[in-house]
Image 1 (cartoon, helix red, strand yellow):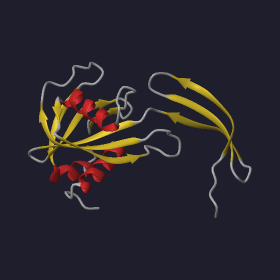
Image 2: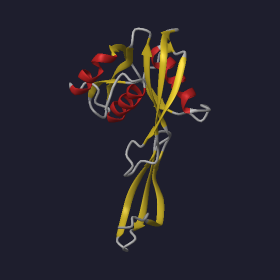
Image 3: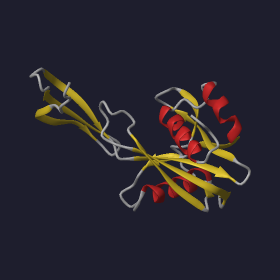
Amino acid sequence: MLITPWTVVASRTVLQDRWITVRADDCLTAEGTAIAPFYVLEYPDWVQVVALDADDHVLFVQQYRHGLGAISLELPAGGIEPTDPTPVDAAARELLEETGFAATDWRYIGAISPNAANHTNRAHIVLALGARLQRSPDDNPTERMNLVRVPVAEVAQHILAGEVAQAIHVASLAMALTSTGQWTL
């Protein structure tokens, strides 16, 4: 079966602010079936940082996540800013802002789609090796975080226990740690 893109016959912005744009597309499939509206979420690209320190611990941040209504264990992460020349630069900025750590060896692992069905952005995975504390994390009242260091050998346990609930972060850990040879899939 030949898979073909839909045809967009009309498109309108439903919501636009600094965090997200919601677009409503009126679409036709190749067979002529109308799908209207189909909502598309436009976000900037994101970056996830899998940072390992000299003791082979992964650096996580623990923070409240309002959508989930719970405390979550996550990777340092955030939106790629227009002033970030590359995803690696964004990763270095986010790691320093959220943890106070900087790394000596940066490796771009790749990009994945957070939700190919209706998100336009990519999540870029960056591996940071040799992470060392450089300063205090930024004092951001909208992001209160605790640094949590987890030995690489124990990361899977935290995932299976549901403590690392962010699916993109689980995928980022799998891709980055597999690239180091510390995990096998």
